[in-house]
Length: 327
Image (cartoon, rainbow, N blue to C red; front, side, top):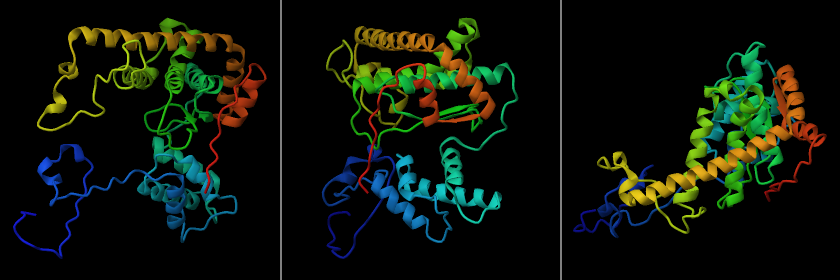
């Protein structure tokens, strides 16, 4: 690679997870002059990966690898291998002869959210968590541009005491402003439910991670996507370099203090309006929320289809776009 020797029979291959910190001298022609980006597989790729890792595993008749591929957007090849291995381990623990969709569903939850914890006993905390999760699911069901609810559960996993799973549209490369606002509202649904049901003094720290996500999405709308009254401006780079301490420096060097103040105000307006709209939906659907919470506490898990059917008895559920892959 020094440019002086004619070693025509040698090919050098290297891999990195951080191409942004490489010295530009490595990327000049004659060095590593061809770059191949390996992204996570699309649904067709996931299906092919699953077919490879399913060899040698006994699958029940109800197993459809196409359904598993559709349920796992964003999974890498290693994630899919781990998924089927976890499903096989669960099958052995449950003393079954073949892997069923029940084991696959549990394995997906474990890969995404972590180990299953001990379910909460009945009490105020369990009811509060149930309202929090139903709040997320209610917004996901009634806001047209939100991804549809897959299931709601009170079974703890990892650090979460309860979870609401959504089924995102396949491998979205473009996201509209309405979809981003819908996701912000969905993330705020848990906090809104706590405030409406228990009062502002009883809101909890359970919405901490949700609020971090909300702040990140709203800020990107303002600083990267030109989706605010600041206009069509890109004010922050997608991923600042973490090289020679640059990642520790403030981003404020990219714009003036006056623009920084405007950015903060624009982010606050997006979040404030989204939260007000979320509160209105929660207040208008208090009756069905009470019914769903009682059912969730009794069963600990509600399937998305059943959740939508119950909500449809009380309110008009918008028709959402369904992704139908061509395999």
